[in-house]
Amino acid sequence: MTLVAGVDSSTQSCKVVVRDLETGAVVRAGRASHPEGTEVDPNLWWDALLAAIADAGGLADVAAISISGQQHGMVVLDASGAVIRPALLWNDTRSAQAALDLIAEVGAAEFAARTGSVPVASFTITKLRWLADAEPDNAARVAAVALPHDWLTWRLRGYGPENPVLTELTTDRSDASGTCYFNPVTNEYDLDLLNRALRRSPNSGGGGEPVLPNVLGPGESAGQVAAAPELGEGVPELGEVVVGVGAGDNAGAALGLGAAAGDVIVSIGTSGTVFAVTETPSRDATGTVAGFADASGAYLPLVATLNAARVLDAMGRLLNVNHDELGTLALAAEPGSGGAVLHPYFEGERTPNLPHATATLSGLTLSSTSRENLARAAIEGMLCGLADGLDAVLAQGVAAKRLLLIGGAAQNPAVSTIASQVFDVPVVVPEPAEYVAFGAAVQAAWALTGARPKWSVDETTRPVPDHRPIIREQYSHLLD
Image (cartoon, rainbow, N blue to C red; front, side, top):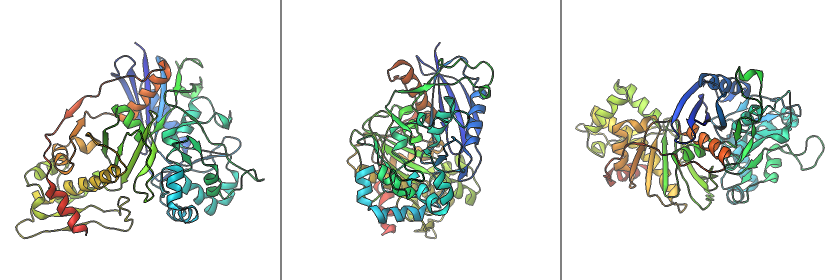
């Protein structure tokens, strides 16, 4: 049996899945936690990767491995290959003003035309501008800029402070497209935007342009795992384990799901995402849709919302029930929740761009104020927020034939049932799985064999389409 491994280095943890090359069946898995916070020492990610690999039984019998990771995180290295400062993660918002400054300097439409996206605090370019303004001494030391999966892949191949070959950094189109200084159509970095972010002049003294990871194509190999003592006993010799190109987490999930044109993915986690695989690039000057690349050679227009499963957490606390009990209450109410409408902007919102908004519960009457209607209003409100994101993606010319609902909340029968009423697209709920790591394993197999594997994805449910326009009508009406 030939085995391949996929890694998901997410905000919360590092997960490793080992799959059978022929069938895609999961043979074993491992996990290790990441520290909390919006800035993290990347060396802690490396420690977690090693621990997760060990927890998954090591690499001694694995033929290839690839790493998907959280997007946008800023990892800055000096000329010796050392990390200059803790990495700023996607959810670190201290660069919000930097995003506004860059838009004012370049223009939203120009950014969209050149990179497919308009900067927000999540993106790497804004974090580099923040570094240049807030920590100019650290900014002056930057010799290379990488993303989390880039840096981990580099370390896995034996590079780092003991072997600081910065030009061996690699990445893929999907992760590079989340920086906002990469053009996913030409597949080239926009060095003018990079230098602008760092307030550097090209070819100037005192630093010049930093090294950026080489962008590899889908299915390419980044190299081989280096035999290193920290990987533990039984590690194969150098050259025996192929390293895939890796990807950003959403692109990894799309690859793991086998998503193709016509598929829209709605992921309900701590935050929510709506994204689709499409053959044509997106350029949304409003900044609502990020025009990312995917991991297969196509594109991945994406909308992110801040309020997703935490909406259910909040209502569950209020009603003193868990998620399953919340779902039971919700299904006992009629579509539309008796007129009760929750706009779930508990921590502001990114889509629509309402950073200072708060949640509102309205439409209550004496007769409609019940535990059942409140529970249903929470689920309807969360899904309507994601449906707004779907509308924005479809407005970019994306055709939706089916909607793949993933994330922990997707397994709640109330969420999937109500989703079939909110979304006017057939809903499919795949089996719960680590799809980001699954996608990385697809890349590992692709790099090993030269062909993308065709592994099946099982479904847990396919709700009967039951579109109820009243849900979104009253949600939208109360926003006006």
